[in-house]
Image (cartoon, rainbow, N blue to C red; front, side, top):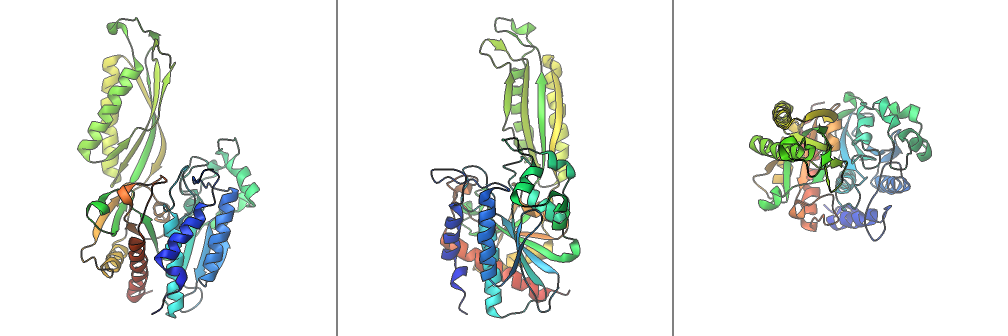
Length: 415
């Protein structure tokens, strides 16, 4: 069977390059944030490609670009395919983008084949997964899943523009955001193709992998308070908040490593931040991720207890504020099995199962549909970086596996 030229791996990579030109950064660097002119431009482009693939298209009330191909009869529940088109600053070309373009290509292939499916196919290009502009991830998929919170309207970007005002400027009605919400009955499942943000496929010389689950994350802002003082103060009289924080951070690493969880301290701020003053206060972040929520929460309690002991010994005070919480999302067994069969059809007889340490839109969609994910090998496991790289051969296998997965689900669908 001859497939449309727009659905080859080479065509997909060319479209990735085209989307990379829509950026708010100079010198060839990529940044594309929610509700920006670049967001509007790539929605229009993705909408055009969806139309060319035979889909009816619309932009929903949260700024997600959507398309639909009807099944054997109009109005059937849909298998939802997609990912996101927004990026982090100085991004790569494939994180999110490859998933959207792969979904469009698979729909185009199936439409061109003439095969009627027992469900509809829908594609969604989420407008905000990264949270770059407003500091809150998954805004697009949360809106679609019906888990939007009104408190988010007060979020502001670095220029002081509120999320509500950004909606209005983009041409959306903030009071209508609920219209983007879909229900569990709308979908038979959700599939997402995404580059692996890790080196494990590359280490095993495999192009594709089956995602078993997506890490549940909790984030905290931790503050250790002591007493600022002159650098000449004797050690026995010091209440050095930075020394306590340093011990706390290495303790976090030790506990998380032992439990085989992911813990990251990515932000640290010292007060008063003077070269000859003992720090009186230190703020630092903690991003704690685990495959299972119960294990992650148990490790947090161990970390908190250990830091409290450090503070007591050093005559310091700890305060902690949870700033983010997301449940782990387990991929549904029927979808995992279908993906594994799809990967086998590309010549890999023993598909690799992988736990995703990074978050994805699938986490939000898990509230209303079973989810499944295909990982694609990424050079060095590098992501969120201009050095992101996938090969044409791997993308070709990903497209074939994705298409085979959809058809396997259609063959086994009972309605």
